[in-house]
Length: 234
Ligand SMILES: [Zn+2]
Image 1 (cartoon, rainbow, N blue to C red):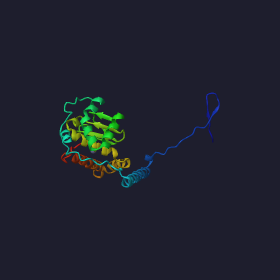
Image 2 (image 1 turned 180 degrees about the vertical axis):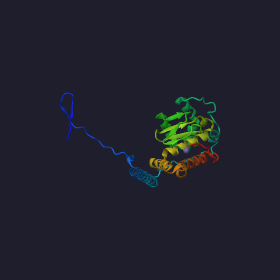
Image 3 (image 1 turned 45 degrees about the horizontal axis):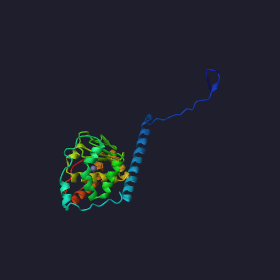
Image 4 (image 1 turned 135 degrees about the vertical axis):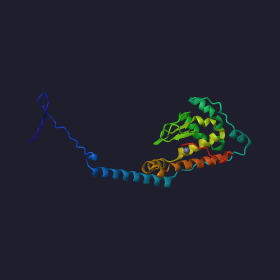
């Protein structure tokens, strides 16, 4: 027996398209197979990202000029020109406050100084703010932070505590964040995926930090600073 829909005017309406959606929770087996497929996809993606990172890497990184022995640099490295920096978020004030650290960066690595300048040109430096979430990485609001580079937005966050460092330390922190900015996307994705798949034990978050701290350590040595690194996340 067939049935048709009749409109108020008496005309037959076309039969509606019926879409049958089989919900995955309809039975236990469907849920299990859906979960298996998702897990397989995630592991394949994880493998592909890791493979890309192993093959392509992060490209050539700028080496540092050894400038710590120069008397004029030595003085700048150990002073803090921003002790009285007001807690303002005005970009022009922040940029001005970074002047001495930028001079040090120009001597240390013109490429990194150019990167900071480019961020400034694109309004991607955020002053005295701690981002609540950094691209799939949530951190407690109470975690102290000197600086952070946010890969998704391409923004550099400079925390309030940053201004308490000497100008040389600030330059080294900027080198640390530059290293994060150079970390390839598949590597970042694989680290996050590992974090979500395996929890803290399997999380390779430390790999991202290890690379950045190692680069920072090289910057500190070239500036004549002690290798003791400022602890900051991320
Ligand atoms: Zn870091």
